[in-house]
Amino acid sequence: MMRALATAATGLEAQQLAVDVIANNLANVSTIGFKKSFAEFQDLMYQTAKAPGTSTGIGLLPVGIQVGLGVKPVAVHRQFQQGSFQQTQNSLDLAIEGDGFFQVTLPNGSLAFTRAGSFKIDDQARVVTAEGHLLTPNIIVPDETTTINVNPQGQVFAVTTGTPEPTELGQILLARFINPAGLNSIGKNLFQPTLASGESIPGEPGLAGFGTILQSALEASNVNIAEELVNMIVAQRAYEINSKAIQTSDEMLSTVNNLKR
Image 1 (cartoon, rainbow, N blue to C red):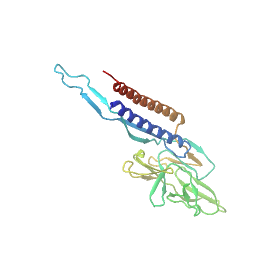
Image 2: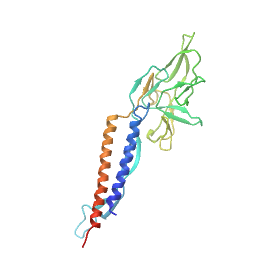
Image 3: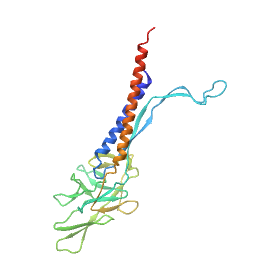
Image 4: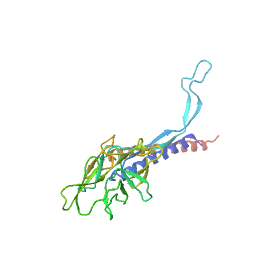
């Protein structure tokens, strides 16, 4: 079998993965706090007929003969650039301006991390995500609360009926990671740490490199539709070219097969 057939097949698989990643980005263009990804590739090993620098008896080969054997995916890298802000009328919609993640507690007791700050109040007056996961540290909103205020440093205050002075309900803490691209995506806008990301580093908003809290706002997806469409066109054309290489190799094999004396 011609090398080109197997080599072009790896190209088809690589471009299919690229399109899969782009499709996921576009599907989440309206997902709050979503961070886009892109696929990274590297070339496979080379078949060497003549190595560069080989002695010819009268000197050294300035270049060799090496034929590449294709491409393979090496990573799907998530980009954590800041998304744009969308103003809302909900006092529990919170956005992080800068570095950091909100901390939430999953039903199994483990921590997860998110950039999606669309919080609600559950039946026990606790601040939770849309899926019901508790914001950590937990904040309880008292009965008859008329106004909730969250300052840029993450302090939460409430004004209740008959009490003109605001009462502090708690402090929102953020977490950051040495390598956020190494976080494990578990869906539902949530991430969990891995050995690659390192352990979470908690801290107060506005201090030690953490971002600040913006109330009544949500961070939109950082997907750029125009950029993704261009990337999709490039991947599609690359897929077509690799399929053409397979077709050409097949025609060459057919020509050899049909040779007569």
